[in-house]
Image 1 (tube, protein in one colour):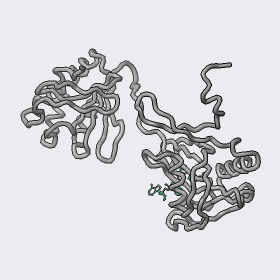
Image 2: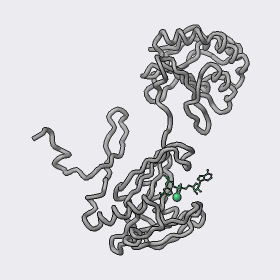
Image 3: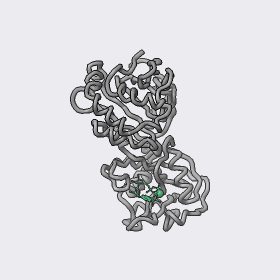
Image 4: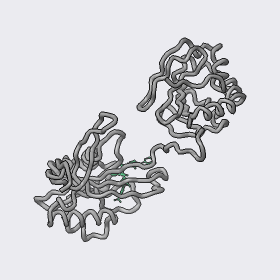
Length: 320
Ligand SMILES: NC(=O)C1=CN([C@@H]2O[C@H](COP(=O)(O)OP(=O)(O)OC[C@H]3O[C@@H](n4cnc5c(N)ncnc54)[C@H](O)[C@@H]3O)[C@@H](O)[C@H]2O)C=CC1
Ligand SMILES: [Mg+2]
């Protein structure tokens, strides 16, 4: 079972920290996905986890009394011995160090940064820094690169009306589909149904995914990329009760009027035309439908979206 190397900067830090009672007897560290548990590494060694890519994770939250660790001593110890430790880790084939710092221990960020650690990401209660040890530029994957927005094109086939809103916060009052940002762990269709209900009071159910727009350096995404996904929804309530805080107007509009109007965004206009085509020629021409499949490695499930595949193709075993 892999262990963190003996000696080097972490050892020095621990030696100082031991007197503060930071590293009591052995205790296995619990790893996240893809992590191996560290074998009990003996008193005086910082417990870490070696991941399946050869990186080492160090979690300050796991130290019993990290709140008593003196950051000056921490920095001095790191700076004094770290070069040797990094060399040693490199020679052992470690590719990176991941340092997980609880927000209340953020005083350790600056000392770590002075050694070359960079931010990888932050959550509301912690930050994660990395130091690349491998050859050449870092090959560690970045963190979140996109935000995901989802809108619902709620189309009533009986009346040929489509649900549209004008946002209150926009400079131009243009018709668009109600929608908003997906929450962590939320399925695309669930976001569309939730946002439509929150903004308009209309209840609906997911039918299909119609379009995906990818836009980079999006001002509404803090300069990151934005994925804007439009779903086709079927309404099962029709009385509008729109959110006054978010929307200026909301109405059921003839789909053909939405196709014709100039007072809309290009993507809304394009998807209105797509819907009209689907309505006339069959929604199977435009729908990407959803199915749940098992993930091979994790045992979890995921949603896959694609054009309808005939059953004979789903079950076929060989090529004719
Ligand atoms: N082309 C189109 O038709 C449009 C597409 N979109 C897309 O929709 C998605 C987002 O939808 P939204 O309706 O904007 O999301 P949303 O329905 O989740 O609303 C976001 C809310 O956060 C507020 N907000 C945003 N930034 C803020 C800040 N810095 N400080 C305080 N409040 C802030 C807004 O005022 C709004 O109330 C994105 O993917 C975007 O690209 C949004 C508008 C038009
Ligand atoms: Mg919205």
